[in-house]
Image (cartoon, rainbow, N blue to C red; front, side, top):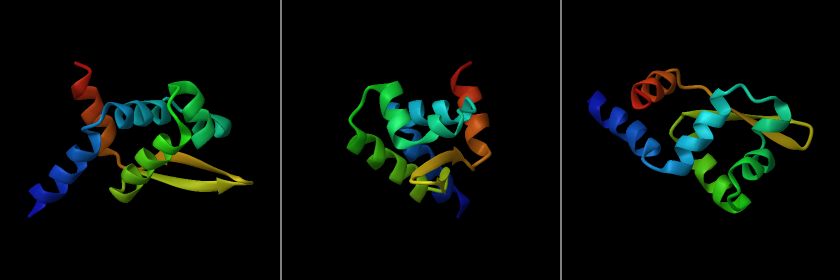
Amino acid sequence: MKYRDESELLKAFAHPVRLQIIELLLLGLDIEGCSVNSIQKKLGIPQSTISQHLQILRNKGIIDGSKTGVQVCYKVIDKRVVKILQILKK
């Protein structure tokens, strides 16, 4: 049933840090701004915490990472995410 998938997507949104990460990635950050270190600097949260949240988002298919040199650059790949955030901000 599709409700299970939708519920899992919403669970991934159910944390303020993950919402912040998604919003940062949707702002179209450059390559330097989409790495764990850059996200950590912008949010002021420990790198290990950021990595854990990124892993959750990645496991749910919301984001994906591509390696650029030694860094992994993350981006939002689930198009439903944009619509959900627009609704949340109204």
